[in-house]
Each structure stands twice: as structure tokens, then as C-alpha cells.
Length: 207
Image (cartoon, rainbow, N blue to C red; front, side):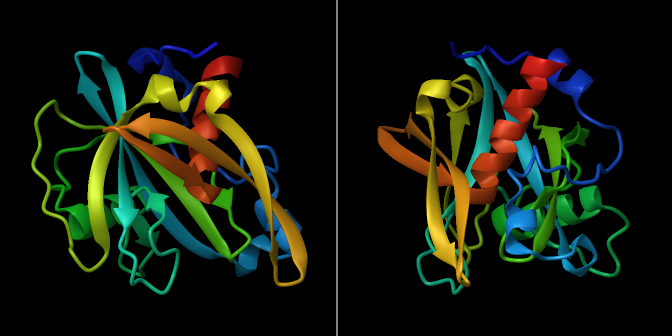
């Protein structure tokens, strides 16, 4: 049955500081790639939650089609940690400001999910944050085709979850997929983004 996410429960199940990756939380993606964690590229994403009358919504983006990496994919705003970034939260807020024009003073950091290892060599720290009811976005047209909201309850519906696999660098990798309706479109969310959404869903069920 789909769950109705509660802000207090979400806050309680998150870690106050960055958390190491676990095989459960990243579906062993990095482990399957055979990459040592020390060799992974540290990155961070902002997992923004918008309060609406109908419940909490996740703010997501769709990458433009001309990008070399992951064109057209649905993702959270984020990117590589830079040397001057004080923390993964700093990286996530900076990247969100650069990609979608979300002022970095607006999100209220709720906490961290466990880091997510990808088969492509990244160690991603998901930073969950609450947005104010009203905010303005200015998309970087080169990187971001659109930003949109999806009800968390819809993302957490097990009926929308499935798994697929792909052959990458000579190895078969399994990854999660979430199919859901948003703004009269069927959205296919997969890979690391889907994995981080499902990691939060598991946290809410177990904690």
C-alpha cells in the first residue's frame, strides 16, 4: 500500500551528518562495478521536498537531451563536490542554485540519506531539504529542460517500482525504476535517482 509521508517522520529517520554507503541503500551498484569506494568521485544532490495542500512533493529535474552524460534523464539537482565546498550540503545547495536558480538560503536541511555508489564511479550524498511553500526557479537552459513536482506518496507506491538491467563495461548491472504519472505525463525515473527515492521509502518503513 502507498504510504503517506509525514515530515516529522522523514526528519527523524535521516542522519544529521553525511553517512557512508551501504549495499542495501545503493542496491550494491558500486560493488557490482568493482570500484573501490576510495576511488569514487564524491558528489552530492539536493532531494528537495515542497509542502503542498495535497501533501509533500519531490522537486525533480529533467536533463536536456544534448548533454553527454545521462541526456534526458530525470534527476535531482547536484554534481561533483569541489575543493572549496565545506560539506555535501554546501555542494547540493550550490549546484541547485546553479542548475535551477533555487536560492541556497531557501532550503531547510532535514538530514542525509546514506551515500549512493554508482556503477559509473560516483559516490553521491543525498541531502534532503524542505522548501518554503513559495519559491522561484530560473533553469539553466543548457543543463535543465524542466523542473517539476511529484507527490512523494506516488513515488513511494510499490506498484510503481520495478527493476531493469543493463550491460555496462562487460558486466550486468541491475537498477531500480519508478514509473509514475506527473503533470499528465508518465515519468520514468531510474538509476541513482530512483535508488535514492527508494532508500528514503525504506527508511520510513523501517525506522
